[in-house]
Length: 130
Image 1 (cartoon, rainbow, N blue to C red):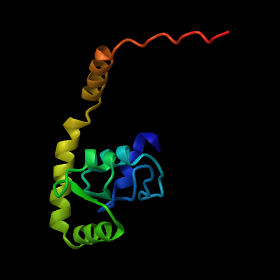
Image 2 (image 1 turned 90 degrees about the horizontal axis):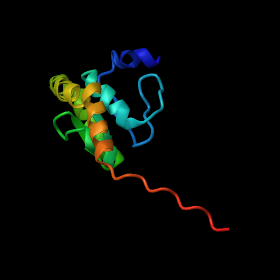
Image 3 (image 1 turned 30 degrees about the vertical axis):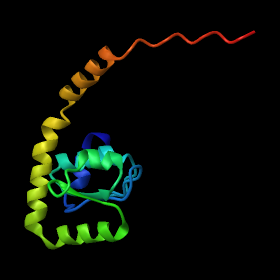
């Protein structure tokens, strides 16, 4: 499963991600939606997700998917993508084009190394009072 996760998205037109912590994907996979959104983008799929920080960080509204605040908005966005294959294709293509360089493993490792190199040194914990 771990080595073939993107295959789970084959045949899926529009993945829906209801909240920040849970993803109900094509095979009932439950996990972090932030990473599932990235996987969906790399697979060339537009996404519809709730309006929370992690989802807003990944989806470019109206360009790679839709972020909505309520059930009616989620439903409307999904219906729009389902009804418009050309929109699905263009948003999915744009999602993949943007995601590949943005979430490249080597680039992300470099970013974390820079972050850790600039972090202030950790202070030693003080000894408990006796």
